[in-house]
Each structure stands twice: as structure tokens, then as C-alpha cells.
Image 1 (spheres, rainbow, N blue to C red):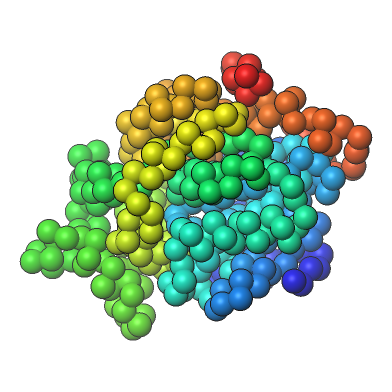
Image 2 (cartoon, rainbow, N blue to C red):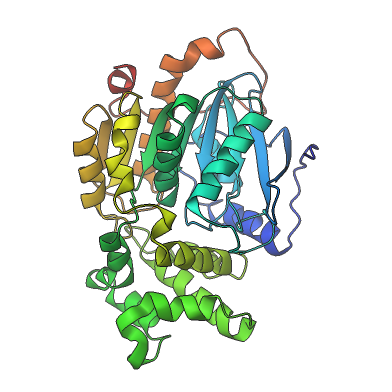
Length: 374
């Protein structure tokens, strides 16, 4: 395991572009509730024993309460902005790029890339970093993986912050492939238009065949179309910068190829297993945040999860879509991590460290504190 300080400069290579571009993307529209930008104090690569090497990083308080951030996609990778949901004076913030995503290598690789493999990677990372338990934070596909990991290893979890709930069932995948045209017909026409009429009855098979083709002249146009479609449907109001990020060469191929791979294989888990095994984690505190007008992961799924998990605090953001960086969702996520601070404070109460800048205090609408402490 290699560890070395990370600098304030980013190498703008294939996966470096992902980090740099996403940082640039949100530089003019960062929600005011987020904590100041910070740098990791160490990072490295996790050796999985196979072809994959997993990039990981730590920031915040080295002796603080551990929190694991799980990115979406699968295949999107992490970005510096995602560190800012957490108070760096309180939390030991762990981010990692899942197999084939971001700075992990090989890029966009599908070999041994399944949900059970990702769960094993998370456990290996936890043990490598000598963490006993951590708070698990994930949105979109990150919520899927958070639930799957928690149900496999409830003893390693302090609680959950979940956003934009996706259980990756056939109905949800069909909605993504066909149903979103109800709200975004123009984006869907562009997405479906990549595929000949004769193949549009099974868009997933058609895209999967192209995305896994070794010829860049075949897989890159398909990846860009997939990324453009997902980006166009991810926010309540149009966000051209987000769309351009999703269709960029640095993001599109890993996002589209790995998503299609997981969708094609029903995320490598039994049907409805996440709800069927929810009893394994219902005793743990949880906050669920959902945009009312989330077109990518419609609210019906979050509602179903909340009804199956009545102990969880469930907040619907009335003026938001799917993105974690829409103002209302970002505020709710920061409120959730602040509420968990009060409950998890004893783990780091004895330690105080300096950080690069004092954290901004978020505006409070209503707090999930009581639900978290229940």
C-alpha cells in the first residue's frame, strides 16, 4: 500500500481530468452550506489481489469519526467537492474510486467488477486503514452500495446517510432506459437515436454491445450519448456544465460501460435483496434524503425504502431533482452529517486538530437529530 501526501495540483491525464473538470464544474455553483475545500493528508492504492488497484484518500481529522463516501454510477468516480459534506475538524473522511472508476486502474475495466467484489474492497479498505466502524454516506448508486455493504457487514457500520435512492430493480432500470422520456423526451430521443430502430426494443443490450466493443470508434460515441442522457436528466433545472461533464471522455466511458454492465447483470445480487435484507441494519440510525422531482431515481423508491425502514429519518426536498449539489439536497446532507456529529462525538471528543479553514455553519431548516439519536 503506497501512501504519500497529495498536492494542491492535479495531473490532467485521463482520470485526472475527471477530478479537475468536476472541480471546475462546480466552482461557480457550490452550495453555500458546504464546508471549505480541503486537501487529503494521505492517499494510496489498495491492492485487491487481482487486476484492480483501488485509489483511496483520507482528509479531515485523522483521529476523528470515520465516514466513508460512496460515489455513484457505478463508474462515476470521486471528486474533491465530495469531501465538503463533512466537518473536517470532526470527521476522518475516506473517499475511494470503485473498480474501473476515477483514478482506480484499469480504467473502465469490467473483469471481476461486481457488487460482491466492491463489498470486499470496502472491507479490505476498512481493515487496511485500521478502522473499527464508520458512518456510510452514499447517493444514487452509492445508496445501493451502502445498503448492500451494510447488510453484508452491519457490525462495521455506525449509521447511514443515503440520497437519491436506487435499489437497481428491473422496474428502476426500465425507467432509466425508457420511462425518463416522459419527462425528458428530447434527451431520450438523442439517447435512443444512437441505436438503430430494429434494436431499440432492448436498449440495454444494444448499448452494452457497443460499450464493450474494443474499438474506440464504437464505444466512445455510445458512452458520450449515455452520459449526455443521464446528465440532462439529473437536475431540476438545466445544467449544461453537468451534461458536458457526463459526456466528457474522462467520465463517459467508465460511467456508461460500468453502469450497463451492472444493469445487464441485475447488480449481481438476488432480486429485491436490498429490501429483503433490510432487517439486518434497521437497528442502525439512518437519514434518507430525496429530491421530489428526481427523474433518474424517482421518489417512489425512496418512499418504499422509508416505509420499510420507519426508524430512519426521511426528508423530501420539494425543489430538487437528483444531484447532490442542488441547494436543498446539499443542505439536507450537511444537516445529516452535523446531526450524526452529536451522536458520534464521543469517538473523537478527546482529539482536536487544525484544518485549512474554519468550517462554515449550515443554515438549519429542521434537524434530523432526534431521528439519528433514536
